[in-house]
Amino acid sequence: MKMMAIGELKTHFSEVLEQVKQGETVVVCYGKQKHKVAAIIPYEQLAPVSERPLGLLQGKASFILHDDFAIGDDELLSA
Image 1 (cartoon, one colour):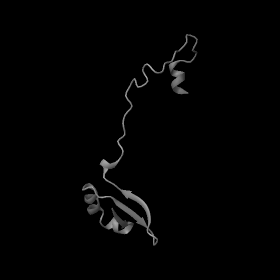
Image 2: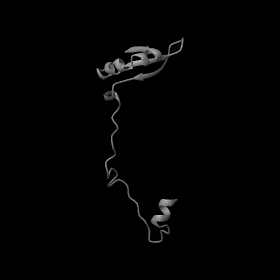
Image 3: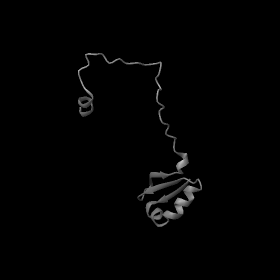
Image 4: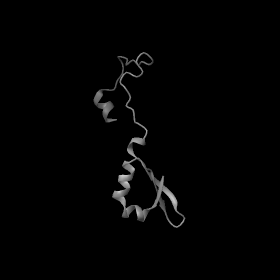
């Protein structure tokens, strides 16, 4: 893991992106105290966002719309 000040990151941004593409993590520091404010990580290290499949609750949950349900599609969508 590499640490860089914001000014150094701005100066060498293209090189830093190449390092990140190679798998390196870069921590961005700020101020005299070198507070860690961000990390640049390879995209592959992000947790995968899984899509919910249709029918996930099929057989586990149900609903019924009764005949006296008084709201129409247009009213429901505009609410």
